[in-house]
Each structure stands twice: as C-alpha cells, then as structure tokens.
Length: 212
Image (tube, rainbow, N blue to C red; front, top):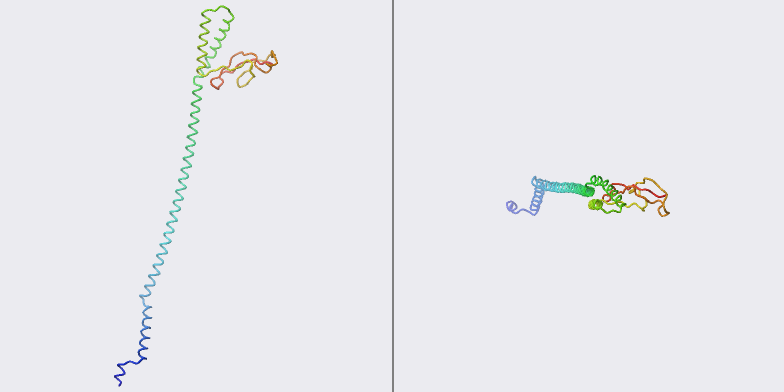
C-alpha cells in the first residue's frame, strides 16, 4: 500500500508542485536576462531622444545659416543699387558737362572776334553817311555779312537792347539821360556797345543808356 501511494501523488502534492512551478516562473522573470532587456529598451529610448534633439539642433543651425545668407544677399543688393544710382548720376553729370563744353567750344575765339564786328559796323555806318556807292563799301558790307553768318552758325546772337526794359542779367548801364517820352522811362534809349550771347550764356553785356 505504501508503494502504491508513492506512485499516485495526492491532490495536495499536485497543488504544491503547481505553486512551486508558478513561483519558479516568477523568479525567472526577475533574472539578469530580463534586466538586460529593460536596460536595452531604456538605452534605445535615450538614443532616439538624443537623435531627435540632434535633428532639431541641426535644423536650427541650418535656419540660422539661411537667415545669415539672406542678410548678406540683401546687403549686396543694396550696395549694387547704390552703385547703379551713383553711376547713373555720374553719367548724367558727365553728359551735361560734355554738352556744355560743346555749346561753349571756341568761346574765347568768338569773344575775340566781337571787336572786329564792332569795327566793321562803325566802318559801314561811316560809309553810309556818304551817298557815293563804291566797291570798297560793297566789299566791307560783304565781309561783315560773312562774319555775321559765321557767328550765328556758332551760336552767337545779339542781345536785344534799344527800347527794352533794363535787365541786369543782359545789360550794363553806362549812364542815364532824360527819357525822350514817358514810354521810355526806365527803358534803354541808346546802345553804346552791342551785347552778345553764346547759346544761353552771355559772353558780352550790352552797354546801354537808360532813360529817366
């Protein structure tokens, strides 16, 4: 009977074995292998966190670099616009100076010719007082006309004076005399020496007499 009982365990023995097996499984869960698995998972999470922070930091640096490059580009564009404006102003100024030089080219030569014009006019006026028409008078008249045409072609024009209102920008008052009429008061009644302009520039003021 004793041997038969050993071969057939009782229900209590079976329960005891189940409890031991469950405890043994619970202990197995707390083994070093389980701890290693938890550490590995934690390490993976930390690595992923570092990688995410690294990507964020990299994007931030790239954004800062882009902004820096945009600032440099804007600065260069501003410098380029300034240089273009300065060059445009220089070109306009140079063109204006060139035009002025073209207009007044040979000014000193033309000014020196003016006394010759005066002499011709005086000679013609003196000859006009004689009734005799001779070849000399005709020759002087022809030369004077040639001189006048030459001066006009080079932009020299006579300043209007007789009967005009006195203008300090065009006329030089030599003296004043009583006006022959009320209409000529404050106006030019006589011209002592003709004045001339080269284009818009006065090269010799007209010397005049003003009525008062």
